[in-house]
Image (cartoon, rainbow, N blue to C red; front, side, top):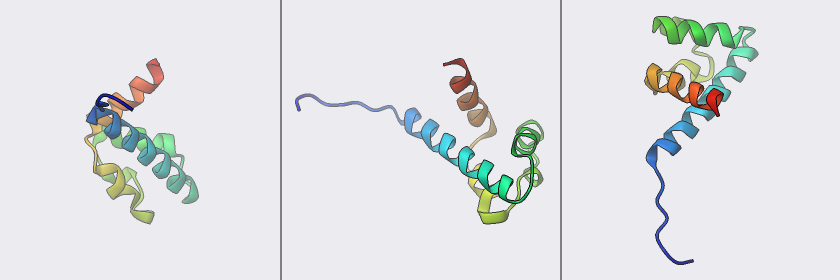
Length: 79
């Protein structure tokens, strides 16, 4: 292989956010919540109480800026 491969860190961050969202969705389902409603509530209000702390779901999601989460969701929708 010749040449240097360049990776953008934003691609890694986007992938990490996607994986975290999938994980949080499964955790919320496991607890009997509607994950879409809970995550939307959190993203709109900023209130972490919308996300269960079961299996550290709240902490996992709060590692990311809400604006960045919305950006990733819209990127995936637009593609």
